[in-house]
Structure formats: structure tokens, C-alpha cells
Length: 455
Image (cartoon, rainbow, N blue to C red; front, side):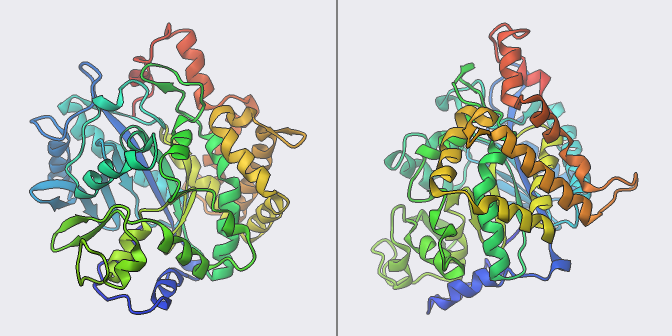
């Protein structure tokens, strides 16, 4: 889901502009949409290596052929294609070439299912003749950080140089993780607050349900969602649970305060990225950055800066739910179904907000800190996260049934929660199932994952 006004060169002259920018995302219920984003690892069938950007069978060729055959417009950085656009959807590259579909804002999860089917079909038709396959997991199961290629995007070069200064796992976040997220609308500041609080408090439940990153460099890593753990040692200035979201007085203005305190990465000026890593955005507003003397931040810079904070839930002109590992197609649909069910029906949202209303700060952090390793087995109050997940799924299910959006077969959107119900009832996350295969049929090898779980 794109950010309106992101191309504006309007100078920032007062703080209220930044607040108003977030508030401009408010939409009446009839205009609410669902935007799903998902990343996947490319791999070469021959040798199970990551595909490079260059070459006759590389990612650049994949992008150009997708554009030529299926009507996507190419976005260039220099002479290199780095993104594709069609209607309101985008295909982009993560730092090591993870292919991401940023889906169009759609009315229902049924529409998301159609979009996903078309996307995977198009990608397969181009990738297979190139000898490239794609895998959905939260963390690259086989390759070392040094094995990963880097895509020719200016902002990634800046981040690559900055990440080791602020955390141990930031380069892993960039090159070896993949996620699925959903972007959802709000009608007012009060609606945004309730949805933000529910999303943030329950994000560890999504992490547990979607946990699918138990391997690092071919061996079990001791986690169910290592991708989620990676974020805990990436950059503390721009990650985490944002305790202030649950405090009295939270709203657009408080989020602006947070964003203004996040150190900068870059500014895109005159067709290139300028390295401003670690700089103060407030000084940029005043035109006081020595790297760009006399240049003052614009609303375009602010829109870009919003994308460089990485909390578990992120506010732009919509809310992003960011806690889930990527996975196979059915879970790429289960994620938007889960959050749509929780947040887009008034009764379900009220029930979810009541559920999280008793969570203490310590309990929220216990969930966030413990779920990456233990997932559904993490203890919580008198039970386990599995018990909480069952309750959350029941609320989401009721919300989707109340929405009553049906496909041609007469099914409502709750049909897409089936994989999550199965996970809760069995008690086995995707990571648990892969670990069982690793210790059993796969004979302590991860290579079979590329055949068994490729799209």
C-alpha cells in the first residue's frame, strides 16, 4: 500500500504537518482495504545457491521478463531495474534479492488469494526456465551471511555500512530474513490507537503461529522463529514493542515524537541517496545537517523516514502488522485473514482490546522475548501461548464471519484461518514440523526443504 503524497517536495515548516500526514490516512469503513506483502528466497535448482542480480539467468533478467510478459512498469536505479509496478501493486527486491510482492489495497482476503495465485503463476513462468525456485521461510536455512548477494540499491548500501555499528544481527535481518505482513486502515485517531494496541500486544501470537525459521546454516538454531530473534539485536533505536503505545495520551503526536527520535539513514536528493546514517531528523528539518548544508527536510523525506523505523507494528498512513515469518501460500493468506478478523469487525476488535487490556508491560515483554525460542510452548499465566492463540483465533474467526465476505463457492474469509487452527490444535508450529523432518526423513540435512516447500 503506497503512501499518498510521498513524492511531495513540500518543505517541513511546522510539526503539525507531520501529525496531519499520519491523520490523512483516516478512511471511512467502506473504504478500508487489505494490503498484503510477502517476501521469498530465490534459489538455484542446480546447486542450491542464491541467484545473483547480474547474468543471463539472474534476478535482473527475471524482473525484465516479468515486466515484458505481464505488463509491469520497471523502476530503475541508475540502469538497474529494482522494482516493478502494475496498477497499485509492486514487486521489489530486499537487500539479498528476496522477491517481495507489495500487494494492491483489496476489499477482501478472497481478492488477496486471487492476487497471490496470479503472482506466483507469473513468477514461476519466468523463474523456472531460468533455473530459479522460490522458498517461503522466515530465515534462510542453508546459506551463510557471506554467501548472500547484494542488490544494487543505494539505500541498502547505506544500511549495510551502518548496521554493524548498532547491532550484531542487522546484516542478517537484511539478507537472510523473509516475512509476510498485512497493512490495514483506520477511521480515526481513536480507531488507530485501539488497533495499534491490539496489534502490538498480540503480535507475539502471530509470531508463534507463523514460526518457521528453525535453521541457520544447515543446523537447528534453537529457535522456532529465529527471524523474530534477529530483530532483537538489529538496532534498538528503531525496533521493539513501543511501550508508549499503551500509555495515556498516545496518538499521532506521540508517534511523531518517536519517529523524530529515530536516527536517519538517508535522504534521496537529486536522483541519488545521500548517506545520513545516524543523523538527527530534527536537525534536518532545521537545515542544519553538515552532510547537506542548507538543505531542509521535505515531506518526501518524512515519508521515507517513516519507512526506516522497524517496530513490531508500524504506523504510516495505515498500520503494518510485522511479526510473522514468511511461509507457503496458505499461510500468506492466513496472516491477512487473522488481522482482518481481529481489527476490521467492531465486535471482534472490542473483544480483542478487552483481552489485551489486562496484559501488564512485563507480560507483553515476556511474550515478545520468549516466543522466538518457544513459540506456542511459552508459558503464559496459568497456561501457554497456545491457549492464548486459541482464544485469539476464535475472535478472528468471529470477526471474519461477521464481515460475511463470500467467494463464489459461498465461503467467508474464515476459511483462510484453517492452517492456523490446525497449528493450534496440533500444538505444532511450522518450525516444529520442519525440525521433525530434519531429525527424521531428512537425516539431519536441510537441502530437502528447497524441494518440499518451494512455491
